[in-house]
Length: 304
Image (cartoon, rainbow, N blue to C red; front, side, top):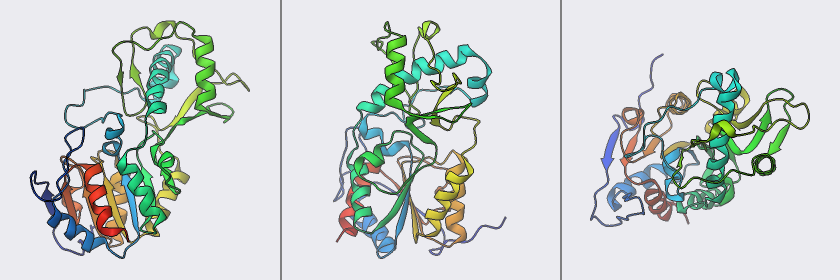
């Protein structure tokens, strides 16, 4: 398949410059792009309806770790086939997921989430497509959000399709496992899983309708994104006039597919991410900078 050349020609990769005007530092030492760089991006995007694709980097300032950011621990996430294969895998997953979800539930939207909601309310952002499963965009006030990989606050029965609020399943888990306490040292991952040692004692929750297997309504490694959900993301992109990718390394193919869809439409593509992404050479402009800080500074230039 031939790739469409960007409207602005070869992509420009711009690195943040600490010490320049408009530079800001966050708790995780993220740095915004400098004023001149942000002015270039604002000129490119001004007057266009933006769709924003977000990844784990958007939620790190809310205390949720990143899979692939600097210093992220190596891990081997459970696949969908493993989850289905036997009860021991499901015990290990649910024990970790229960503890991890408590951190997700306690997390609060950060300034980046809030800014995207503000820009949607102002008519600048048409909607958010997120690879995150933390639900923070909705909690920040964004109205049109496509949870590309699902959301940890929902649980689905794989047999009968019954849906549950995660909070109600958490109550069921606490009742069946009164011994469970959060370990002093627990590694919580961006998918809401956590590494725990006493998972073998864990009693796995079951569907109260059919006693079938329950699974958080998230896309596991090796599992396909539901066709209708990706279609919703594609429709949102088609109704927009530019794509901004924030906090994603684009390692997951779904993000690259959306980037290529934007390129076929000859839409400007701006990537904001600290570090290399798989889409850098295909972006109109790449800002190698802190996500929260750069979104905040960019909004100051685009909001009326």
